[in-house]
Amino acid sequence: MDQLKASPPRYLEFVTNLIRNLFAFEELEASFWFIRLIFIIHVFLNFNCFTMIINYLCRLKSNLKALKLGSFRSRISTINTVSISKEETVISFLKNCSCMKDLEQIHARVIQLGFEQNRFVVGKVIVFCAAAEHGDMNYAVSVFEKIGDPDAFIFNTMIRGFGKANDPRKAFDYYKRMQERGLVSDSFTFSFLLKVCGQLGLVLLGRLMHCSTLKRGLNSHVFVRNTLVHMYGTFKDIEASRQLFEEIPNPELVAWNIIIDCHVSCGKFNEALEMFSRMLKFGIEPDEATFVVILSACSALGALDFGRWVHSCISNIGHGCITEVNNSLLDMYAKCGALEEAFEIFNGMNKKNTVTWNTMILGLASHGYANEALALFSNMLEQKLWAPDDITFLVVLSACSHGGMVDKGWRFFDIMKKEYHIQPTIKHYGCMVDILGRAGFVEEAYRLINNMPMQCNAIVWRTLLAACRLHGNVELGKQVRKQLLELEPDHSSDYVLLANTYASAGRWNEAMRVRKTMHKRGVQKPEPGNSVVGRHPSLRSDEPLLSFL
Image (cartoon, rainbow, N blue to C red; front, top):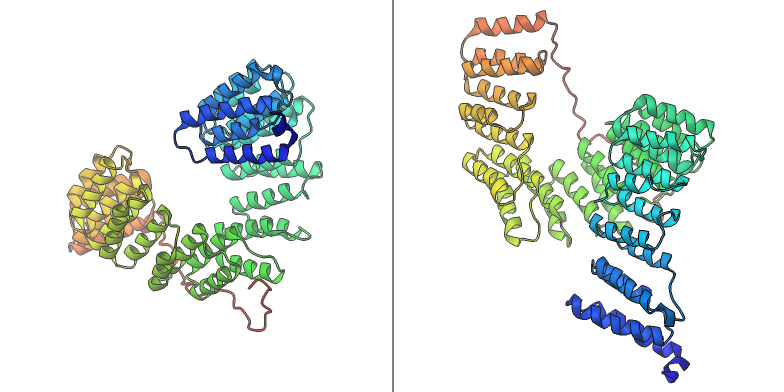
């Protein structure tokens, strides 16, 4: 023992390697008792390896055993000359917490140690409830109400949590309570509240909060300004977003990403491409978020040449191994009709996910390759590496619709429910109605709608009405039209579809009566659309390429 104490570096290396080797253990119980042995050595050799042991247990998702080990440490702490503080131990547990069950156990330990009024420790408990994917704001409220003097950080965390839970009333209730206590609202407070306004489309409240940031001089703060730009973008007020962005002296990458995304969300796709080109001229290097957004704009425009140029940027910068970026490239090529290039991206991806398969299957189906799309889906199932989700089956049913495959459509619809336990949504039922309607089974499609577990919407009824027109089923078309009158009485396409249904059956008087009714009610057909395929800002050859291209 004395020799080991005299050479701590040698002992440090030995214990560190020993604990690292424990990560290879598959039997948790065996490794747990092994850790206890190391811990006893740690106590007598005056070497602090307790944090490493706790982190190891937490990585194995064994917070309960970590807590037991903490209790074991406390029983022999009288002979431990170097020990971690209890607060640090609890924080270590909280950092590695993965679910509410673990959090409740750790919170119980917090109370046992007398930290229920420690704002730093309790704040971490509330952070998990508010920010974690499986958090619980009801539990956060119960913890918050027991704090005698919560600080601004805890209030901000509560506001953030209710914003994430889409509960604006409670978010602003806590903002009001914060003001009543005389606490100063900071940049985080307003960033969270502005985000809530944007998410829920609270335009008036968002403008009022904007005024509040101006009063407090926080409108120029980077977090607040970026959130304001994004909020107005979600309001579809692209002029306000653009004005706020232009007032930023030297916008960083995050601000550029936000303004480009605002243009895309507002349907200003050409302007988004222009902003991207402008960003490159300023020497800002794009990241994966930039590429995902700009490729979505290329997809919407059908700007294949610009998309290929973006692809070259991605390759030169070295983002070609990022799955999300590759998925966006795949989507862009597929929507632009460049299926060979889409397949090249698909086959070259080392890391695929369900979105990858969904995108490729949809690309094939939407361009008339229904059999190839279903073969790719079968390949996905055979590999058993990716579980299909509700979107996958939506894409597959769409392929069956394009290919007129009624039997396969029914089979996949049943597989989705019985084998993968995915409950069909209104969109899945809409696809089945489309499959049946295209094939002429309009009566069966009508029965399916009547047996749906949810109320049918106008889109699905309109799909059936189009099938009635296609197959000349006038009587059923009239019944469907009655349903549409209750949902959307003045939708122009319903009048046109019904009139055409009468016309296809040679019942011209009824067709004219429908059209007269349409004109009498002042229902107008929408303006014809304009093609934007291939339109994008030109890239002049004399523009200097940036150093990273």
